Length: 200
Ligand code: GRF
Image (tube, rainbow, N blue to C red; front, side, top):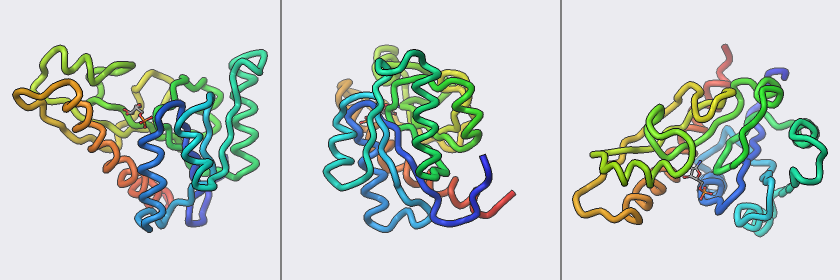
């Protein structure tokens, strides 16, 4: 894709679930904390709380159900078309539960970020907080990274540690991790947007 030169960069949020991260980003934007970004779309692959919230604040909200397409590729091509129509510059995956194909990654190379609830490369994949808790690690954390073709493997942009304190329940630990997620995702998005806008 051609490089945007204009601020604010047009941001699409991808979410499949509760959408607390998408919501934190949208709230940061509303507070004026993300001046280099303009959220233009919430995309979901299913009916989700994330989509409900986006609709409730009047953000352009789109759901394309994979089952309505003959193949994974056809679904992704439809998504890409919608992104192109909206001139999206940057994509933030926020609990988007589908692995993107190489075609998609190539179309938005270095323009897709993801947040993951562990210190990658530790605990990639699903149930990361629970697995870390079950192992009683002294700490885990949160990673924001660029998305490549692997599962949670792209270059890391920012990480923050979260201690597993004595006596913490799994719920306490989850809450502590989500709190950090909600703080660092918008901050990292802003730093990355600035980097793009400052040119090569
Ligand atoms: C978060 O823990 C995020 O790190 C992971 O999926 C979860 C999404 O939560 N990728 P939410 O839908 O943003 O509440």
